[in-house]
Image (cartoon, rainbow, N blue to C red; front, side):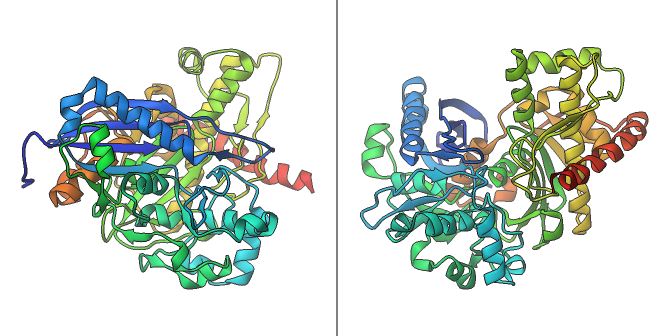
Length: 493
């Protein structure tokens, strides 16, 4: 039983790529209010992706300031705060706590050669970290800075992930949680501790790293000046929180073995909780710690999911939601066109930041609506790739819940259910993303509550069952889809 004042509230902050979101929940986990502030991404070169950490902080202040105006009484009663955020971003601070350069983000592909350098220098890196060295991870980015910006590298005193930079601004503490730290390539994921061996490859040590806590544990107390700014009575316990997907899993209630979700957001994620460390590095599966104790998780990651449809919408001058709706109205089975959704490279199963998106099967009949259907089908089949890699690791998924903006499309969910040959559960309308999961973790830390008791599943309003006829049709389409990538890569050589 959760104890405490029934008027207590809890704040969740999600430091995303496109914006910072803040959400308030009550002791029963009901959402009270939310606010957000946008962020932009700098792309100075092809394959680069950066943001200024000061922009994260300003967006955080704008978001919480908005709550202080819209829901001042509820915000005043905050007792716990949780953090979620985009993973992998390299935020570099010097001894004076100045940010040394813009943060290099998760979808930045510049550090591909550094990945090879890490794995050559530490042949056990995959066994320790549970992951292939990928350009999106933090360690290769820092090694890139060492190789290309040595004057900046020499000044590094602390390396923080995006949400942990915000934690430092909120509390003055350098702390990360197990799930987010898993994406650095410096964590011994099985032991849930920093790996001295992996740190040494990049010339760093534990002194450069934040300390580690579980996502549901306390990491510090909100600064007094911020309590005053937001008229909070305090004290406010700040939880460890989680990387965006682990926090979303807490929001949707996927924290027990076999529970998972399929996320149709900017990127696509097939996520499943595990009772132990289950790596499959050959299939480019992420094997990370979960944001709750004694739990791990696996992810198959598609770098451009709804981002692919947004790209097509921008190219054709159409609205993405409108395109999806028209594709659903016109849908009469698999189309001639096939799309590979590798606009930003791809992780699972190819681990190739240089991969690029492709349309094939175009004809005079190909119009924006047919191409939108091909994009949706391509993303659905990419989820099929991810499931194959999870199965190779011996993982069974017992239940899948749909989250993310793309899950509003009935056709897209129907295509994914057929591609996975699995039922997909659709929750009631509500926000079950990173900010909501972070707020739940903040509740756990402040109330000393069990995550199993707090992180429950939402009410399911419908279940999308795989259509056997579509499953057969897309089996043939999937074979064509799978043949395209190796053929294109061979043609490049």
